[in-house]
Image (tube, rainbow, N blue to C red):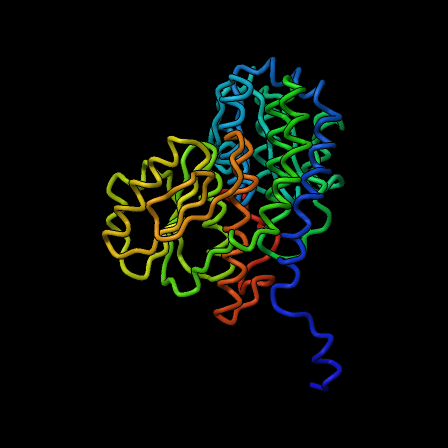
Length: 352
């Protein structure tokens, strides 16, 4: 390779770094888009007896967040559901349900089949996607289509598409509460920029041999998403738990070499994280907590700004994204293009 070519060759991780840095402005755009559709979305949410979330990968993590948002902000029962089973197995009557299908690409065959099945069984359908011309987006009228507005995401690990999907889902859940939504739309992007600019929020997990990520309540989604990022970038198994579930037996799986990353969004989660940190450290693991608490019983504590619980995942996921990126580089891997992964996953129809 010539000296000139070497100078212009992109550095490993440059796409992921750029897309992480874009998140505050992209999240602001996502909030603006969903605020503009809040009236119509609020009618659907208000009429729903229950809400079901469809998503895979990072969209599944975002759906976990949305379940908490619908329960706490809209006072409506909500749950995630397996897209494969809804598409090809379950024949439940869904009249009175609102199904929210979340997909970055809008082209996942599994999500498409599940969304079509939900509508055929009587559910109202809202699509949350980054791709306005996708097959999934075309299933609904514009008023029921909420866009990430993340721009093109080139790195395989989702970063900005995850946090923008959180903004969309928070906007839907809070669509009947305009003051709450407006406050989040203004404050959250600014707080995200502060966390990204704060070098003290970096986490070094480069020497870990295996990982556990956990979170409770709104922070459960952070644990799930952090685990996905580490799996993708490092090609290693990473376990993900609710923190309270981790304390029930699974904590005994950690050992020296394990990094345990514990995220919290409220005082209950912080208390559980402290218990988990003590128990994991007793077994030899290195422990890290991410929360707004002033103190922690972990080996290392990343403090994020104190915010309402439904804002915390926007901030808490950022150190975990960066930890996955940094650990990959230390190990000589390119986090932009993990071996064996593509941006869109297609699952064949069962029995096909």
